Image (cartoon, rainbow, N blue to C red; front, side, top):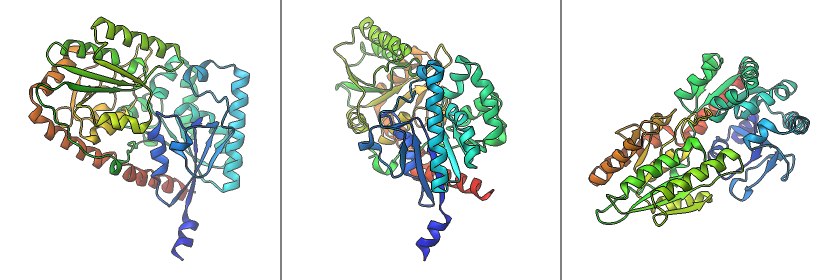
Length: 400
């Protein structure tokens, strides 16, 4: 009887996203996977990939080989006729699934996808939630001003706007969204699956530093390498970089800067470039390293993290000391001097100083990483965040 009642009261939600799912978006998988049983999820996407890692029930894809434009240069510049044809197909599928499955909530992931989904939400009579993740906040409206106008329509019509932290929330309000529509919803990680292993470094052994991100200007990798180029004269170093460039020109240009910085400081023998790696390998490497270095910056084109890199949350959970920057919502995740160390953006000397502090005082590491783990458990546990997201859906559904 209880199970029957649960089915009757279950809220059905469509998650709309171009591709389910690229390797770097484990954080999106966690959002859906950890929603409680009261929520029945349906995923509507242009194409599906990496299902060996990210399979979930109820994935509705146009094709596993669809030409949906998921790179940002394609979103901005793809032939208009082709783009509109693809969007129409996606919206048609969305409406069909909503009506067939009696869905009541549409959750559009990324702001520009939310705008594209407006007509489908109206046709299917759905409440609409849109989550912004960063590049859709600061980069897109500046790169293509028509998106600022489109966002005004989005803000007027959607029921709830979600984002990762207070900095991004204020950015969205500054774009014109009513403050009462914006709610902070932290991204969650599978905290129970991440072993807490406080790092210990002994003077005399190489200091192993991990950098992990896509090669994009906002990730600040050249600044990390500049700092390590200075530190190498004081301590033996082993540096691992997980990540690579995508096919965007800006990303390829950033890769050239990264390689040039390695050349400048003669770091070839100390830097291991692993390229993109599966999620499992990221953690295998993490536990082999002492420090995670992630100095995000505001890119020259306005691109930012928006919130904070999920990798910071994950690495802090493992028990690794974190050095990052006072960028966007990073101070919400890494509390400076309490759970990690933060420098100003592009402040190479500040990064060097923080690295030197950790090298000089390894006895202070335990308190730092223990506080970091507790903070992540309290604010970024995927199960807790899943329950909070479900409460948003249920509240909207109750409004009728």
